[in-house]
Length: 260
Image (cartoon, rainbow, N blue to C red; front, top):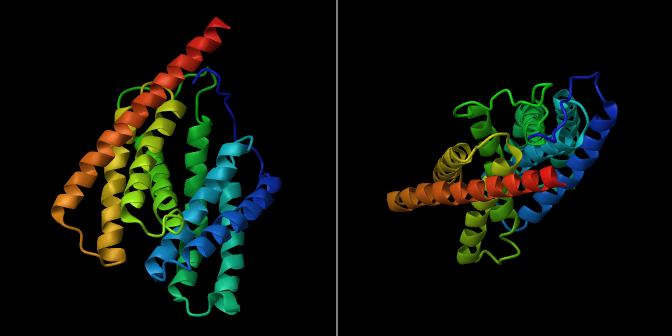
């Protein structure tokens, strides 16, 4: 996008490591304690914890100046020790599977780093100095990856974190799940340089398949083939709609700025 400023790598910004740790305690801790009383499945609790690291990294990557992917990684490692201790050595972790702690140890830093990359992409950190996007030609797989990461985050947010508010009402949860795909498409369509409508739509399809794999094998709830097919089509169309709306909003904003 034309108003985005090119950023370059810089020495480790420890301020953003600290900010990431604070944000992670709020995001990961808050998410876990919202979900844990309602969902007693280790798989669901683990998913929410791990997605929390992605969100933490995204916060650092998106809001910080410069490219701060390594800062998010360091913040993730520190958070790993904090939550591993809280869940493994205090009453907060009583009755929980040790799988949670092991997942934290293995994936925390990597997921925070992945979230930071997504945040940097949404911020426009990887554009050329002349303002032209490096991947603004043809089908942009980087935006599929960014959209997939964002889609999984939004799915978890709109399903598992809002479910307690909806009293596990499946109809309302499905509506929230559907809205998450529209928002996914809108964010990618608006934030990405060039026209990126098909990329988030593909990401939406992959996200639905990922959701199905988690439900089928993570929490072991069989899903009929018809439901999967409907979900894939729904995810594609809703994300496509959101991306189109995001592109329209981007064009309208740029037109307004050009006339100012």
